[in-house]
Amino acid sequence: MNFDLRLPLGSLFLVFGLLLVGEGVLGDPSARARSLGLNVNLYWGAVVLLFGVLMLFLALRARRRPPDPPGPQ
Image (cartoon, rainbow, N blue to C red; front, side, top):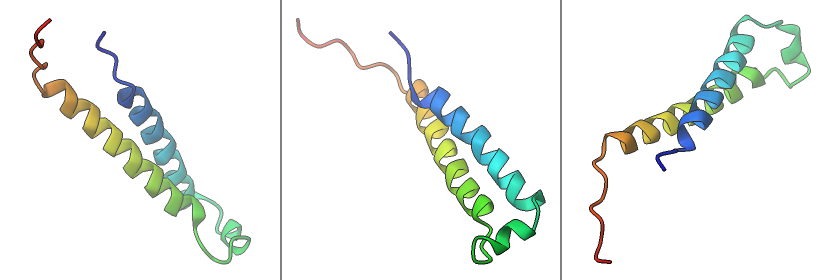
């Protein structure tokens, strides 16, 4: 079986990270007043986006690696 969970998880986190970063950049500035002046959507969006990129990188790197030869049976 050739299923790698990092590929769908990475793409899901990438999309969610892009949505959060977009909300942080284009969102209502009055929302920052409720969070002590911090743009929480932008910061956490960047964290989620980086995690998604890392998962996609690891999944694509694992696909390029040749399979291990079978051991003695």
